[in-house]
Length: 406
Image (cartoon, rainbow, N blue to C red; front, side, top):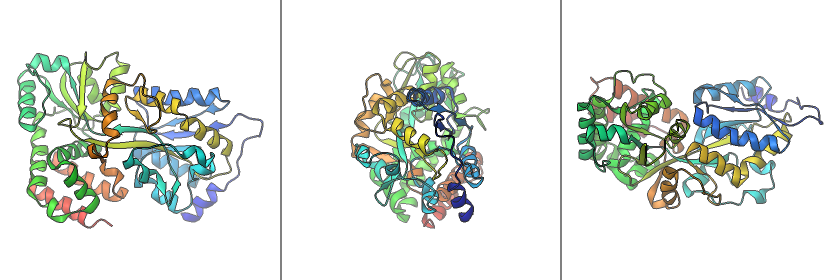
């Protein structure tokens, strides 16, 4: 596999020198809001003389598999989207990724990033992934009309208040909690519950230090029990539902709450709804701590399309492009020096948190190898979907995976 990958990345299939540089970008950004955000990059790229040719594939894993197949097949794409973290370590270890400093003047890479993102895009002092946007991974969205119809007059700020609100929504015949019943969404919700119960210090001890006593302590068990209780407030059609279809339940006023990332803001915008009037949002279940992650692009080594890679890197580093992309997505630009004018209210509310290390924690996928993260996701999903699994059993399974992680 290594030989195939390296040979593929050395293939010389360069287009004629007089042709416009074609940017073939493989991404899983397929929702209406994500497509609108990607169009900002496309417009900027074509305005600078390039030709935009994206390959948008539903499903993060599907998009990644397609990119790897292209690399092995000798036709690597110009760039591939990833979430910031260890997911592209193997590609970098094999020498497949082109450092961003080879595409632009290294001086252009001296811009401020959120502290928790820096070491997720650099390897041995080299930037190997180009950060594009920073997001709150777990944000509580709510339909103001649905809450009003159920007599919920205040957004919950603790778990007793949350369960009281969920009960009112259920009694009113509405879906209390809209969930896309896919393993990654279930796992995201569990992490948000965990953060609300443990707080910043213990959450980071758990995922950064793999503290055995903490995993088997009362706080972790309480988080598992709260998470399990939330199953009573999700509708039967949840299994297999996409995240944006869950957001549509809030847009259509059929559901009260959804716990999902910043990107859901773009779906409300596409539906003509406005924060404060039609929907609301807060950071996590209690509005205190922001679990952050980010989207990046990586550039496979290849003589094919080098001009396109250089042009695309220049475009993506433009603060105005980052701002435009983030604005459409409802998130924030990765560059802290990019303008924030016109950003969604939900994003602006998170801006202060992003700039305060005391208020942020990294999303789990940014802290663990992909296989370990995947195994933990399976543990969470199995517990969510099998009520015969006890909370204590889930704790032990979670502990077994995390404590054996290398």
